[in-house]
Amino acid sequence: MTVSMKTAAVPELRKTICSSAIFQQAMAQEHHYDTTLGRHSVLVYRQALRICKALEKKGIMTDRRCITVASLCHDLGMVGRKDRYKNNLECCIKHPRATLTEAGRLIDDIDPKTEKAILSHMWPLGVRIPTSREGWILAAADKIVSTAGTVHIILHMLPAKQKHAGRHISPLR
Ligand SMILES: [Fe+2]
Ligand SMILES: [Fe+2]
Image (cartoon, rainbow, N blue to C red; front, side, top):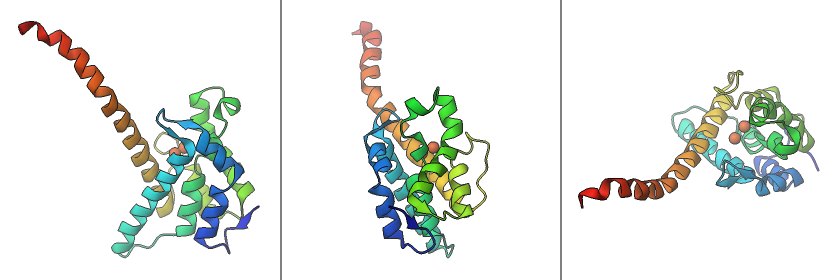
């Protein structure tokens, strides 16, 4: 089932994406060692909404349709990454373009701003620079969520490392 980006309300766009078969696959695919691709996408969506709300409090309006489609779909091109790409570098470079194909199967008439936001979401790891407010919000939200996940992993590794280090500084006891 597809919906039109021009006419569908945000809840309908959200429901169409999250109930799709590819999003369900994303919910089951491991991502960044401690989460799934689908969960990551939902967290990026929520983070992007937080940024939108903060901007709106300052009178800066954002396009919620664009944010919804771009953030929930931004990594769908990574679903089945082991079969799609030879290695992580190829995945990093090519998945934004593959995402457009996958998103186009769910949403009709995705507007150019949303397409560009998806294509530039890897910035600065990717060469495409965001060209809209929503594109910058998506790129920032993706980095915030990914960095928070990495910090979470490191913090969970620290106690074991500290225990190990403790054994080397204990001879004074
Ligand atoms: Fe990505
Ligand atoms: Fe991402």
